Length: 338
Image (cartoon, rainbow, N blue to C red; front, side):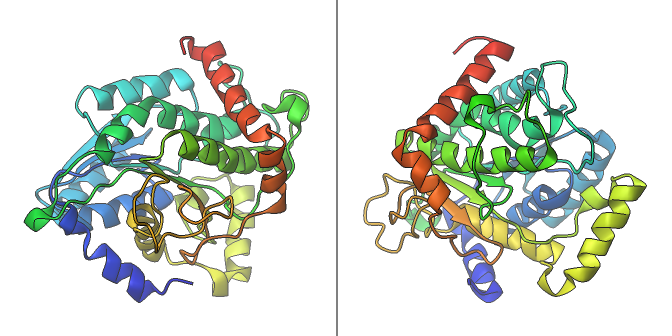
């Protein structure tokens, strides 16, 4: 476990990166994305932040508060229904038109639902798209900007520090078997299968990308039990069920603000180094059991989660590469291109 004091001490050093760090928070107008964005803006010099979400009114309120916490920050709202890959592409184009680099891509958009498969007009289940496909589309689109950030030499007092990091908030502990003949769950959909596929495909894709892009860190986190606005925005049945869960799990609940601080630590800590980092003797052990591998599973206590048998098997038999190729094929089938 990483103590909250250690987390806060690290976060207090982020101004050493110098001004103009660029962060994109997909799902940044609520929940863990919002609280992490707040922590990022408080802790950095003249940051440029993009909040991607659906609610312009909610974003306006958050932006006003963020500007009050750091008047030198530039905060921009990018509106879009990110369950649709076409709208993901439009959001990315809006960001790329303004930024050559992105230091942090934070992915937390999601939903609670008791419904069965609920297809978007693009043919993907909405929940599975939000939790996996649209996140990977943001990542795929913004990889050039993340790579550019890794070569930046900005820093305070002549200190050269680079930051290029991707965080997807889901469940780093919960990797489970996949239905390999139906990765997008056209014929085998259930809420459990949806969760399994989103979680395991995230972990495998992060590993695949870390191997191919050694200048960026790829991190899959489990946030713990955090009371977010997903409860507020749910229907009566889901709200009642979630409130009951929070009551039962009160002793394990991570406070909302602390979750933001911990996720900022995870996104920026030198423990979670890119694969290509030189001299990473203090690097954490990656999701594949190798120190400093560039892909990490991180729990609610900010410590790494051990390599898991199911991931080891999928690594050995080539399923990891198959999952990423499936993801690219889905992108090509919906939005075209490479």
